[in-house]
Image (cartoon, rainbow, N blue to C red; front, side, top):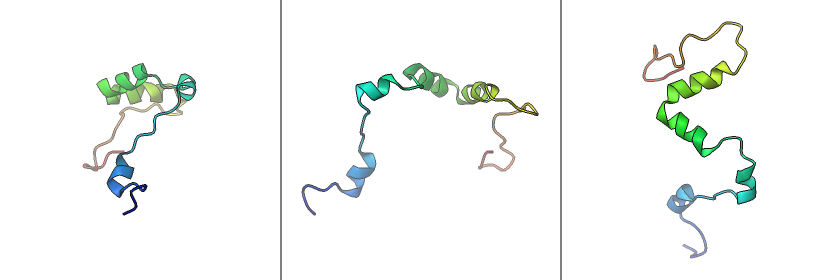
Length: 70
């Protein structure tokens, strides 16, 4: 393999962080990610409440067809 080319494994694991200028304009902050990680269902319920619903939702995820959630 050409030493200047990445293997598939290297390519799939590569990380390309954004520039500081780009990151400064982001809408999502580290706090937002931490909140989502702490309690994903509560986080997504809160995000859903920011939308207009003709019929309010009653559950965040429907597991009636487990292992697939809706």
